[in-house]
Length: 283
Ligand code: HPA
Image: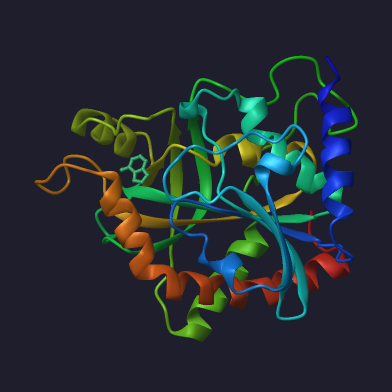
């Protein structure tokens, strides 16, 4: 079988052939959060099924296409939908599209997700900048032989989520007059939601948010030296916090309700990030 690097090169060349734009910023849009990509101009939309070697998303609320276009005057590549480990994909497969974005030339990545709120300061619909993560998925996309084309064997994760980008996001929210929290994201395998005891455990180890995505993508991005901003939408309070069961429809309904604020925040922060990427600032 062809090695990952060759397949990544093939897919990134294919995608770049679909457009004259050369995005320096990539986005991964999570469950119900794809609206940002609908408003892009000069956009080409390529279904994942057409991109060589791309995994296909099966989750409800994930459109499954790469949208390359402009947000204002900033060229961006947005993944409308992602794949998850719980769908049966390996961490390497989950990270594959981010690898492709990296080889397409992006230097910064915004990852978004729907998450359960563990921190009781959050309420349903809150937006949270991810300050750090805890990988409880039992998997890592860098397992196996290391390909130095991508990055080093033991990448540093001290600043997995770029501090200057987090500050940019906070300032953008302030400009918009919106509350933006900061918190630690715990990534679990899923697909079952957590038990209340698991949520108490996650709180005890320092998690503010819980979800089933993001970790593999961010790990691969950092491996490639791509700077990351992560934003969670608290679609529900985590299990056992409110006296009610969790369901996926609630996740989608909340994401739908906050999508205006969410898109406004992404637009506002993108401008600052683009300046940083052009200046090739902080590592
Ligand atoms: N747990 C895990 N993943 C999630 C949740 C949750 O409560 N909400 C949205 N994604």
